[in-house]
Image (tube, rainbow, N blue to C red; front, side, top):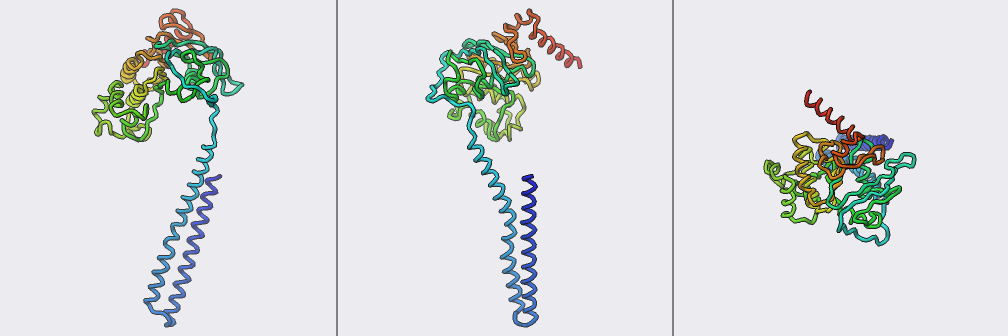
Length: 351
């Protein structure tokens, strides 16, 4: 409706403007021609009037363009003011202290969460991740795996229970210090239309070029960058369209390395990659995770068989916990997921 009104107003403006200019030009030329015919004006006067009229009315042709730009700018300003008026639903407590994760252990204690009261996402989720340990969370789609990551970053407040890091409740500390202590390799890496070097520097905007290049080396990006026409200064395109999925994931890994966070989160970082790229990324992730506390959200179970502990979620509840071998021996939800994926892989290979 708003677009329709805008187009109609522009049509009215342009049509009215064209009509006024045409009538004015016609009237002035007719009057000038009449004077020339009557002998009160010369041909030179007629040409002069014609030139004056053209110089007068040409700038008026830009009136429609100016009007359209003003209308667009006003709409953008209105949206900007609305955005500035938005207040976050999750706020720090007054004088909230900084998180000092000397011990990067994580504990989910009886965590419950819902977006709407009539649809609970997590119900009584409890598990711990000891400092330096790698824990994977698996389950069917919609089980609440990615919601755990959002709650760990405190994008939402819990409906019940608590999440602690090093024994400190995350709701008691500032959000900035909490998120600074956590590095994430997401499933969909967002890149900016800038150079490879600057996209990696996004992990720590204050890092020097030497530190950025070291992060690139540790993420095994050097081989790929050496093939680019402009090396580290190559533009990646809007949202990284000039890079493949595996290359974007390595940029995300380099960002995480540069951030130097004691806690690492891998949110289905290899779910959209082919087998060759997946193995290369897994090798890089394994090197990055050494000495860090790691939470891995996994879809492909073959990527987390080396985890210290695997937590199985089903309909927002923890139904199993243990190592890969222990869970297979239980022949429960995890074993069912494992054998289902193995059959799918065998069918894919056979076809």
